[in-house]
Length: 429
View 1: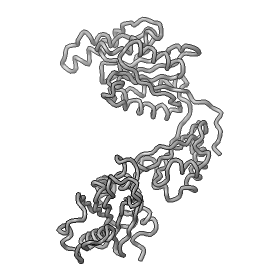
View 2: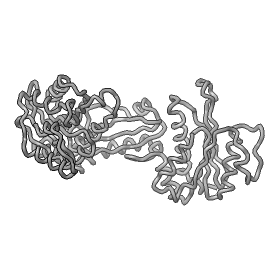
View 3: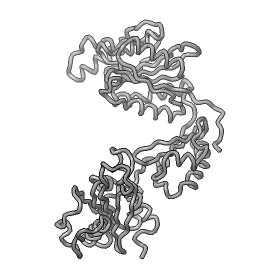
View 4: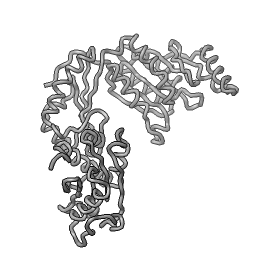
């Protein structure tokens, strides 16, 4: 049972402006960045809206946002060109005129002087603000931000903050927005988020094993995201302090761990390769990879972990099956002709281990089933792990959308290795 919460967070909306966004030419990363910052201040971001560079649509988007949110943060449309209409839309939505601010014009002129350039007259429009609005200082660019209350269709006014669409400028100006939110009493309390990373079960399986945990409206709130067969359970708690949030999270945290156990491989930004690297480091082992079908993903992932130099020996990627015997010229036994795929894979892993040293684990993946037989029960991908005590062989079902099957298979190989290491790994005799 999740603790109830008697307080309602301030509701916010993020509005991104630009034809390049609505047409799909550019991906909106500003809204995600702003949402994280607003959430950390205790606000609940309820809507993301994208509007093009048309004055009627932008004005309507602002009116709608102000009618349903207490805080609206907008990015884009503050430049000097004819399609930069955020200032005009804000003025029209508020029912006021634009007014010229000499101090903003002087700042713009000074920026151009420092860059050794003359000021185009069209930049003068960037010194216009809706009457009653406050400027947000832009130390690096010519587009000042705007802070102003905007009346909703019903009820009290919403606070609107307009920032440049250039991410670097927006990031640098954000502390001014945060300061004003606190001054207006709109930044309420603290939000703490913890993420539990899980490999193996599906979404419906988690729902059955953790009934009631994902119900909306609780505090903490638990949500699920899925990417390449990795589940992320995000636990978000709101409170008046970090300590209160942690107290709310703790029983949910314990419940998840009690139910899922070893299916949990890490937290927050962890990937499976990070979990494997930690276990290898703890057991003073190194890993080498041989890959058929996973297209070098294991080698790529393992080479990027923080402890790569200590735990990863290197990898070899092959494009054909069975393997060419020339790659294993030093093998103690010849390549078995006519053997099953599993026996050939085990031979390759064993041969690589013998060449690299008995303290090196060799994880081999492949071969992959044919793509044209999706319902064939033989559609399994094989993994082999050669270690000083012998060879471990695993099979996993080869499933999922074609674009994610190989990613899933590579993660299945890492998860099998992770569980093997958790069970004692190379210390077993």
